[in-house]
Length: 348
Image (tube, rainbow, N blue to C red; front, side, top):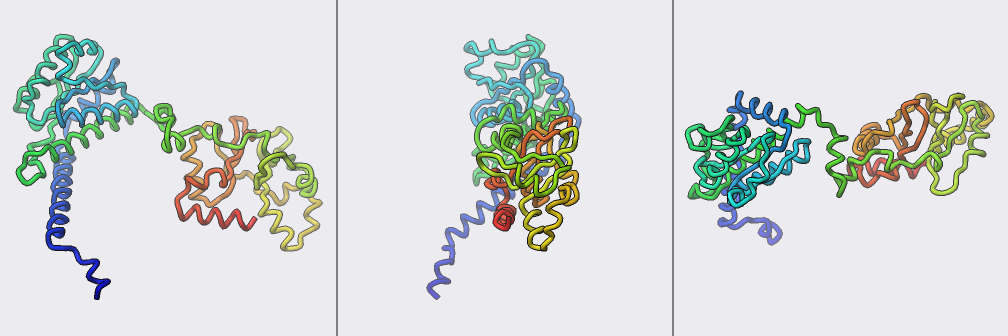
């Protein structure tokens, strides 16, 4: 009875939980309305940003300014050069950051924010296109914009409908949609993304595989015409040992893979005679490979999906230049794949 009582939620907290869920639901419904109401104006904004030769200058005051800073960061990290302009500072000298090749993104729920309205004429004097993110088309900001992106007349999620919440959620979602669609239109790839994210765990995942693989000089590489016994006895390398031998043809192109598990199976099934036959008869022909310009996250996905322990890395001529061993990336695998990988290594 006492154990059950510990899991009972006091009535006051039940109300808090209900309120929290209602706020999330309220904002989610506003986002659904926003998605349904996107129209040709969104496409016009995408076109302006895609063809912008300068920078996207994002401008917002207060809460809208904080959202603007996040939109600025998203644009910058996805291939659109972007800067945040604080509207209060703008009229005290920071308007100097504007250039005729730029696009101004002005954010104001009411469309009547004085500081924002002071910036727009300066942009217009330089013939800078203005994209506004605002509640509707019937306000001063919208009337002075080239493209109007409406978030709709949202009711804020707080009890009194005052604290910016639903409106800022829709602003953020609209900014994300704009940045990411522009990114796709510019054919921005994970390789481009990696250049802007060299740090942290994300940077690690986006590193080119050539920075993380075991290089050729550390690998066991042998001719596919040698016998199994010859390959095993002559392919040793100093340092940390890999669990696979890379086999190459007469042109030094990768032709196969022979693993410690393959050798164990031959011995367990008492096929000793095969040890003196060409390794090409028992190797895995044409194994899965990756190019040396692949990114690390792709390798992790392959190891996880295919449940393999090694992936040779080859150059454009199919010559081996490295190897990704699962023990080098096991920390990046999903938990279930990590357990399977550990078991596989233990059985070698």
